[in-house]
Length: 147
Picture 1: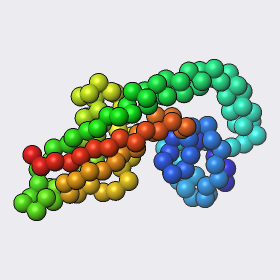
Picture 2: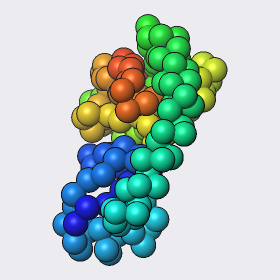
Picture 3: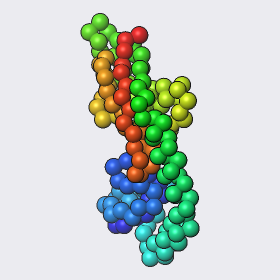
C-alpha cells in the first residue's frame, strides 16, 4: 500500500514522501494516528500542487537549518548523571537530557530530532545526531560524567 506521510517518521521517511508500507501498518497505525494518508491519484495531485506552492518556503527552511547546523558545529556537551562506583549510570542518558543541555546553551532543539546511536549506560564519550532538516544533520559529541 502506498501512503503519503504527513509528518517525519524515523526509519520510514519524511513529510510529503510517498512510501510503500504493509497494509496493516498503514491502515492500523499510520492512518488512524494521522501520520499518513492513502496515496490516491487525487491526493498525489494535491501533494504536487502543495509542493510547488511551498517550494520557496522550503528553501528558506533549509537555509535556516543550515545556518543552525553551522552554529551547532563545534558544540560539545557535558551531561552529569548519578553513577555507581563502577561508572555505570543509574538509568540512562536520553534525548531529553541532550535537548535540555542544548537549550541551556541557547539552542531550542526538539527532542524528537535528536538521535543517539548507542544506549548510554556508562560514563564516557558519545555522539548524538541532530536532524534539523531531511538534508541537514549535525553530529554533536557529548560526554557523560559522574555527578
